[in-house]
Image 1 (spheres, rainbow, N blue to C red):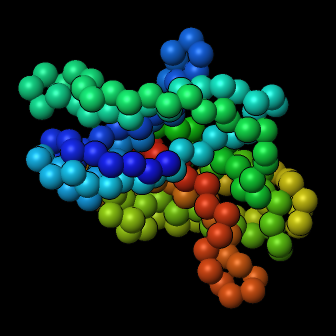
Image 2 (cartoon, rainbow, N blue to C red):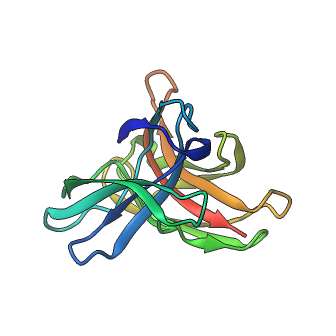
Length: 185
């Protein structure tokens, strides 16, 4: 998803809510500028696929600097498809909270060449603060993977992206990214 925003300190929130209004995933993003100057933003919300197409509402908004209330809300109906990407993280879940130095279980499925994938924990600037090499149960067909990662205890509390990805056997470039935002306290 991507868009334009003119928000206080360029901060905005995007989230997906189901038909009952229950939040399924939320992500904090930064636009390229704000506070009087319009900027652009982009981000990804990744979900394990549904068994049937699921109509949901994508919402983007800012928080009031005065009282923290939702302002400038924009809603857009979308459908979460049943397509199965090559990598699916089932844990951690979107916006799950972890303790500094705590243990994070990393589980999901992958259908990859050599069954090899990498899981990074990245800060807001995209710098990797922890990494884990994982191998799925089988090569080239969707199969399970499971491992654990001890989170660093010397990083600032805040929002971090857990990104599972593979490397192209052709040129070594990053592909098949599946990002999930978590909070570390």
